[in-house]
Image 1 (cartoon, rainbow, N blue to C red):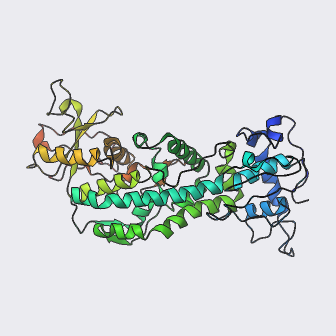
Image 2 (spheres, rainbow, N blue to C red):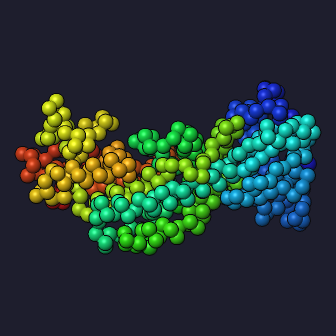
Image 3 (cartoon, one colour):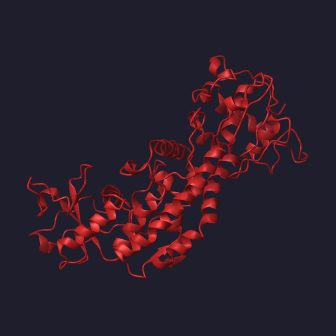
Length: 439
């Protein structure tokens, strides 16, 4: 048989073998699903003369589509695309010895899934409906479209406030990257203050799954750009036309999971998506635009000649009555690097201008100091520059979004101090990555 009889591991607890029980993430490993799937797929591939409805997986058939077809009395469903199996409620038709494994695998594949079988004694559908990987990608897509609309609403105000030159260019892939990375950006330190707890938990689960399955992350973000550029005044128009691109990028990740069994195994590892309250997003989840607005603010400030001059807290000249850097003029890091940042355009610029622009970009809720300054600091500390991808995987396959802030950081002017401060990070290619300010 293609889904051959196999007893669940003797150590599997009853909660994992009882199909009427609430799903439990620990059952993924307790049922030995990784080894079972790894053994199932190779021996279920069809030979060269197989017909399309064979009891095996054809060369042109996604493994997940094959699995659903072989485990159901009807033709099954194709869940390799966003929205592709939203309303399909299957019945499994397998031997009782492998029903628990099939139950959990199908549970992870489907968007809206209900197990109804003789084993379950026709359990109430409402009690066993679940929403898993296909549904997650689908809700992520629609939530990202909402984030795109929220981001679009902010463009005019950001541009009018900062007034970058009309000639300021952006790569189209930059805008697409920061929009699709909106969910992952919610895990960046400093972003937590602007989002709901449920969205934060979903983001954390998603990022962990991507780290386990870097092939999926690479499918969503190819980590390379194109030479297609536009001027800042065209950003709203390009964002409005980006719906298909967003769908294609997110769909590429889902397609990788549903067509490559190793990627599925990695993405679902440890029962990440075998949960009675699985990760999903409301269609109007707020906060997914925050990465975009942080990117745009930083890009517009840098493009308009604003420098983020930094120095140590000790060297800040503007102190309040308690001897601390004046918070209306300086934003000081709380991460332990002991730096404070001040926005200025040139040496003749007075403090009120820097104060006003800093207050506007932060108090409006477009970004915050940790995202704008600390992340840019970390980006340079890692030896990255504005020519590197905004979204990339580090050596541990962790998604790195520090370079999403394009803020121009610089050491304080020699004219402001007897000596400029020492380079705060290790030299890159024999030089300090922080240039002198441009004023």
